[in-house]
Amino acid sequence: MERERRNSQYLPDAHFPALLQAKAKLADAMQGCTDILVSVPSHAFRSVLIDIKPLMRPGMRLAWATKGFEHNTGKLPHQVAIEVLGSAMPLAVLSGPTFAREVGAGLPTALTIAANDHQFAIDLANSISNETFRAYTSTDLIGVEVGGAVKNVLAIAAAISDGLGFGANTRIALITRGLVEMTRLGIALGAQRETFIGLAGLGDLVLTCTDNQSRNRRFGLAFAAGTQTAQAQQDIGQVVEGVAAATAVMQVASQHHVDMPICRQVYRMLQEGLAPQAAFRELMSRGLKSEVD
Image (tube, rainbow, N blue to C red):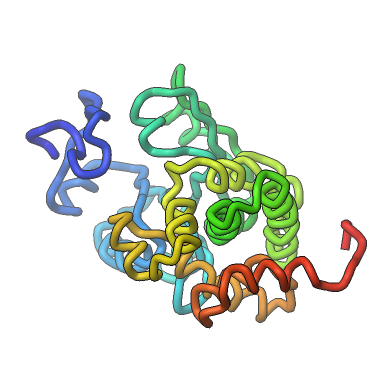
């Protein structure tokens, strides 16, 4: 990457800016820095933090773009960070509707930075914002993280629906009612309701459910066409976060007695072999209720 000044495997058309350096050793990358941004899949988040811990110095601040519950524990990334690194450090999460290819191409993009330290959120927003990239700040770490985790599961549901030919009505119903499920879980975990109608909630959900740049959407389309889970993930060639997230989301929802029927059906399709057509029939035949319940 340093020689070619690009990531030829994932973003071959996005050339590195002059100040960006690729380092083979973590210690070299962290030398002299104050703020750290970790961008790895959720299953690797804890191990990266463990590697970082002995290299941390007083005054350093940590941010991440990792989305999803930890697979085995059901913990959100900020809970993992506190468990590994302690609670005294300023922590922040970046999330929102941001396809990497479009960011790399310099297309206008906005996201949310939530932090437990207001100054860190402001500093980070100022550091990464420019004429094509705009960051908004928030104090709701939990809400931003829940949005980033649940939207991947809902994107699989919307894609399976599209793959089955159910049309636009079904897709928007899944997105809208999925937002209710996402909000319901977030509130149970201590999030702020307003977060879920923002960039990290509704924004990221709509993006992931409707555009084929989404790995979770491409997975759902393949699954609806009859491709087995493992083969679909292999064909995509990158981590499909929603597959493992379906299990983690249902684990957390069960612990907190939160009803998430769409996410439950995705889990059953992926883990229990429930046929997609049967899953949607069950959703449509549930007892009628008020929209606000």
